[in-house]
Length: 208
Ligand SMILES: C[S@@+](CC[C@H](N)C(=O)[O-])C[C@H]1O[C@@H](n2cnc3c(N)ncnc32)[C@H](O)[C@@H]1O
Image (cartoon, rainbow, N blue to C red; front, side, top):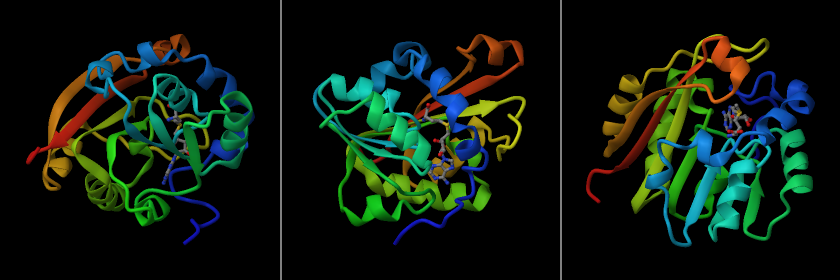
């Protein structure tokens, strides 16, 4: 049941965690999630944040009355989160895409699922399996929100060039329809200067 010691996709994060906490925490939720903000539940909801990093998004959501299950594999991120964002409304879980076995074992469905800057770390077989699992975890009226990074790959990380079109086609095979497909510049000045851009996607169930 426990994820393997090194999960494909997380390469580089444990080593670099100390230098990433500050920049992650400096990001403003409303800025990073500008395009999809209006799609998030506006009353208390159950939210799954996969690859939750230092918990800054989870904390923003918890402060607005949501219950958040934050999934993060990197122990140093979870430790930073416990220090920076202690909240009874956030539960932390060590689990991994594509199977999210521990999340799945709980038998819960989520009103919103967030994968912020995570999906492009997965290779094609992981993305195929992961989409099936995410669709199964989504409540009937739920929304799946994800962002894909494009551009130079930071040293030591594993990242793939994943398009919005490919992701939409994959989501459709799982009964999900896009409600958002946008391309944006990075909100971080250094990344913007380096040519980093993002695809923002959101999906709802076709049968909703
Ligand atoms: C760029 S960070 C984003 C962190 C956070 N979502 C944020 O926006 O600050 C990418 C995250 O993806 C997670 N990740 C990478 N591969 C993963 C996998 N196979 N399963 C679950 N999480 C993964 C990493 O642990 C890391 O926390």
